[in-house]
Amino acid sequence: MKTILIITLSASIAFAQTIYKITPGSKGNKIILMIENESKEKELANIKVKLTDQLSFFNFRSAEESIERIEKGNSKEAEFSFDVNITDDASRIDTLRFQITGSEGTLQQKEILIGYELPTEYVLEQNYPNPFNPSTTIRFAIPEAGRYTIKVYNILGQEVVTLLNEELNAGVHNVKFNASNIASGMYIYKLSGEKVNISKKMILMK
Image 1 (spheres, one colour):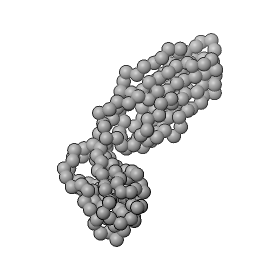
Image 2 (cartoon, rainbow, N blue to C red; image 1 turned 60 degrees about the horizontal axis):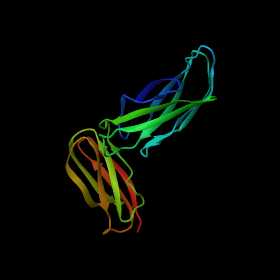
Image 3 (cartoon, one colour; image 1 turned 45 degrees about the horizontal axis):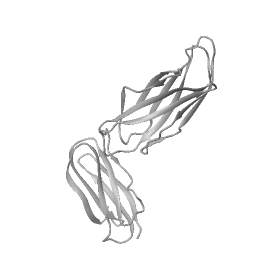
Image 4 (cartoon, rainbow, N blue to C red; image 1 turned 60 degrees about the vertical axis):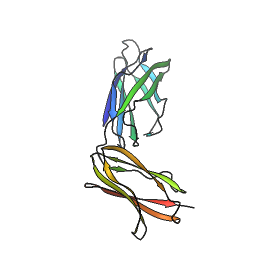
């Protein structure tokens, strides 16, 4: 997904109105801020565009971009790439805040509203915490309703426990695994359904 926002530099504060939708669990999202110099008299120099509020489940490659100068009447882009972890609450609205400064001080602040769409692909996240003792959480995203299972196996491929076996709606889900009654070691957990079969490893360390 690419979100392109046009910003005209001024001394005012720009507040977001549009809600830009992203998909939880998606990779390689981009916010491109087009910085325009409307002045007919002078160039803008030493411009920095900085993400001032970082959300815990957004993973930005960089929180700040620099532009050496923008000539009179021209524009340049500041690009921010990020991944999004999956989140349980797809109805929430979050705010990203950017501050644009130049050689003359703060030029503008920008707020971007972020909303969330249903997943478009199957995602099985690494359990957290990992290693764990004795409990951990497994989070996953499914783009279609259906019957799904999550089972835990030992390294010999023997089933240890079924954590989930039920009909689920499309969206983000999680299950808890309490391993109080099993031995330390490496285990494999697997998400299965009509169109998905994904597995990951986890470590129980008592």
